[in-house]
Length: 143
Image 1 (cartoon, rainbow, N blue to C red):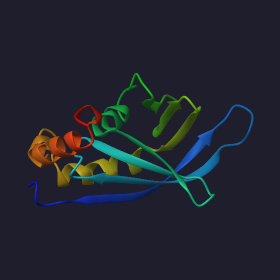
Image 2: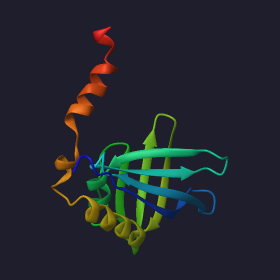
Image 3: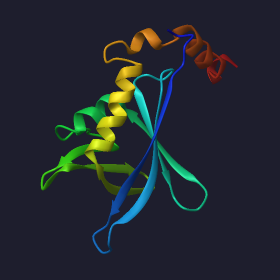
Image 4: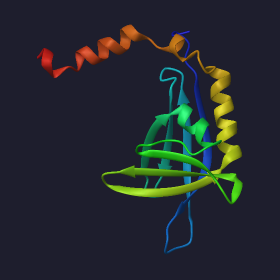
């Protein structure tokens, strides 16, 4: 399976939530690559021609559709007052943001990733020799 490669992309709209202003719609490109089968990427389009990319565990996104999940920089949880929406909280040294989005959109995206690489089969898609070689080629201790 390592020789095969699947890329899944899905557009979404998230809403940036702030305490003192109305929600701001943000276009987000969700993507999944079978060469990195445990991760999903969310590319937030800032409107300035650039994107802010976040990569996090596919399982975190799945679990967050059902129950509050995540304990680090990315937290996902269903919204208590609206079961059709999910909250995504992102934290970094440069800031903190809270978004909401449609649970169905995220669920549909996840189903497509599971069709490509079923849960529990991720390791069969990893190329450990290539990954190890890339790590060793970039190891400053070897210089």
